[in-house]
Image 1 (spheres, rainbow, N blue to C red):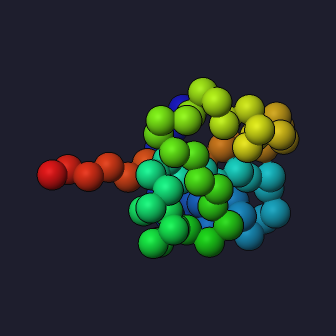
Image 2 (tube, helix red, strand yellow):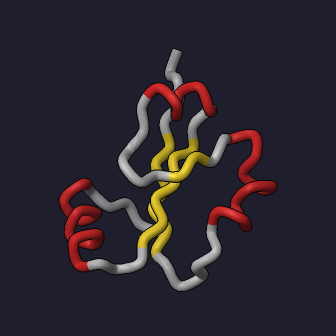
Length: 70
């Protein structure tokens, strides 16, 4: 696992490389605002939903996790 920046992610997507963009957010936050093309993976349902959201086993998985620091 590695951290990548916005520019590297954009280059990967521009090349057409297979990428699955997951946002680990509670559904209400995902509905309010999410990255274009991102799939929602609620934190409480990671184990349950990950297999169905990740059908392409060859794709790079980019995980965006946002938490409430309050």
